[in-house]
Length: 228
Image (cartoon, rainbow, N blue to C red):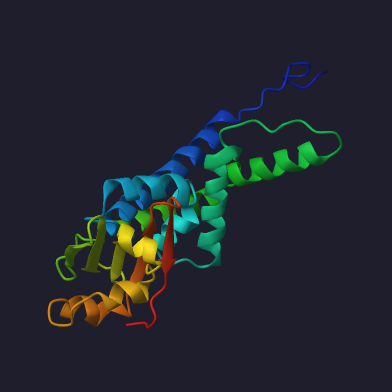
């Protein structure tokens, strides 16, 4: 006697697991980008849009570091896998190749998407990211303070303090400073008046310094000189 189902074609159900991890990965990305938007508070919209395209893209680890989400090795590995889901693994088919490479890639992709324990860990990670980001600029015990000023005719400087983030200074040097080659954080700091910019100077060395380089179309991040 033939067993039940003998001779029937085998149908692989693969859409649900891949769709689930893709949507979960997108949720992590949206939470992190909403936190990054708050970190860029009072900065030009064009700067944030450019950094979304060029600096962050779908790089969940880079975004997590931007909003200071605590990362251990497991969280880094999960965020890298979720980045891979977004960029390719859960969106596009594997290109067939000769030999066993296709099978190896398929097995690795399937294991990452269909592992129940890993999926629970992804869910817990996304919830933790949501909780962390929700505290940025929305914690009454740690309010954020912003101040800004112009630099020359077409430059700017924005300082943010509090809001459960390390102090930040974001600046764009003026065209005249660019022509003079005086665009470093030290050059900008030298322009500040100790009497008028007491708070800004007080937090300067413990601030993340974000340097906007519009002509090069990129952003340079200078880590704090000291840790608060």
